[in-house]
Image (tube, rainbow, N blue to C red):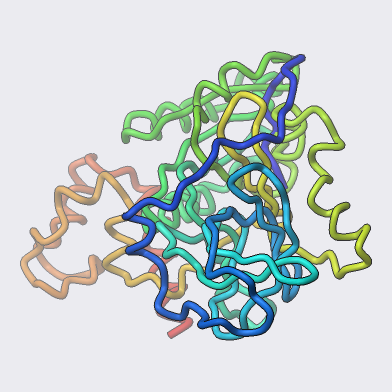
Length: 334
């Protein structure tokens, strides 16, 4: 999966900014920290998880080196973007502690259980295009998931060169912009990535969207050097390890980080309360808590503030329908 922005001839460097374990990070370290288990030599150094491979993780150290680390059995499984404390061992390294995440992106596994995919995300680029036609309900699900995570969503209209004269897709983008979301329009003929890189700045981002909207081409434009994009996987493969990974983190040439998670097109929202879903629709917020009944389900109840706003044209019918679909799906799973 991927967004590939536009880069041109910018030289890539794998050197990352040196990290120090701050007082705030130290306070966030989980209590499960190990106590001199195995052959760990030191208590812990700060590191960044680049990718997760079964019972191992590739960790980037504060001087830019990458160490394949084993995972302590008692720790929550780290994912790309996690900050950890690691210690060298006789053969590689071991992760001793997971620093508490600011947020985490989860998706359901084959059994429907939510599994972490990526952590500490600043931006979620929600990509859509004229072809395949946008699915409004899916776009709204992405936005609700981002709002619930505390991650800023940005709407990216890709393949803009395919917009037909009778298309209303630009009106869709304008509508989201009017709701306060940042938006961006791009297409394959834009060979410079300055617009995307300016948007990303020094942040950590993920890209989401339905199949065929051009996420992979956007990623290629952000990371034009293919050798960069297969770096972590090849390092592990060279050691004869299992290379299945949920996501992989890349440093972008102009700053910032991209977490590429192939196959993430939908998120599980079964863990989100119906109240949180309503909060995820920005235009609903002025009316929440204003209904006649405190437990109003915004269905057929009298004096429902949301329904009144809908009838007054202050809420778009399509958005209210998306809200109802999401809530109905959550209740069906409970």
